[in-house]
Image (cartoon, rainbow, N blue to C red; front, side, top):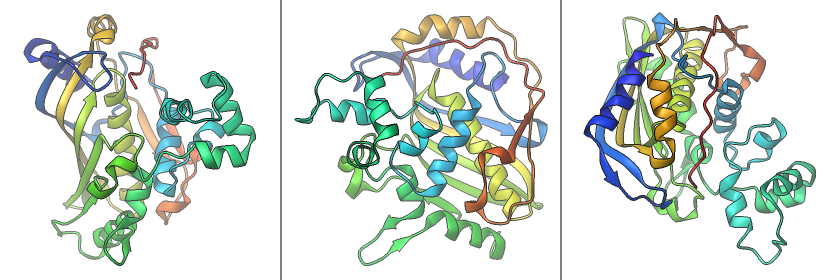
Amino acid sequence: MRQYLDFLKHILETGTEKMDRTQTGTISTFGYQMRFDLAEGFPLLTTKRVYLKAIIHELLWFISGSTNIKYLVDNDVRIWNEWPYESFKKTPVYNGETIEEFVQKIKNDDEFAQKYGNLGPVYGYEWRHFDGQDKYVDQLAWVINEIKTNPSSRRLIVNSWQAAYIDDMKLPPCHLLYQFYVQDNKLSCQLYQRSADAFLGVPFNIASYAILTMMVAHVCNLELGEFVHTIGDAHIYSNHLEQVKLQLSRSPRKLPKMRIARKVSDINDFKYEDFVLEDYNPYPRIKGEVSV
């Protein structure tokens, strides 16, 4: 994926040093866009191995409307563990448990998970239960119905930025708004992301929204168009610079293919096993620490 490597280069060449909420430090720039033709292949990085299992399970978790990490923990997906763990450490019942011990409690104790595994009204809640004054909107169900019945609409939008609830969220949404577009029987999706961890987060975001576009196109009987990724604060954390340089030393390989294994008519009925990745030949994984 040359587009992604060009994105990393752009940050390194035009960005400036900027302190951040986590106090890690970043090289940051503002405003960038990448475009991916989904008919050309599935946009999963080949310059490092990306953990697709976590991407698929996280997306299914969003679509379910859940905001508790137990489903992710039960499926050995660890990408959200740090945020509830940091909150748990501030409670009176914290007794020096490591994050591994915390995760085991989430996995084995439903009552503990219900109390300490919740992230607040984050993505899934907003997609499926966006609150208004006297009602809520299932934005995802609404937009799918609108694509089926009024595909020329310019209102095919799902918004995760519920300003009234930001302080109740363990992490306010980074990828906060997406819009679908139908033309020539093809479905495209544009994502606006306010804050983008270029090394760790963005490869996940690209693949996740490519899959989401595939799922919505599938249930609406449309072909695939483009995924357009528009980013606000694009940054590389200071502790990822060596990893980025290693990745930039690698040449992209041919994109893999993703197919949906069976006919699914309802967005809520997809399962992990429905997604089949073919011809994925990446370079080895490159590790990096998450800044919380």
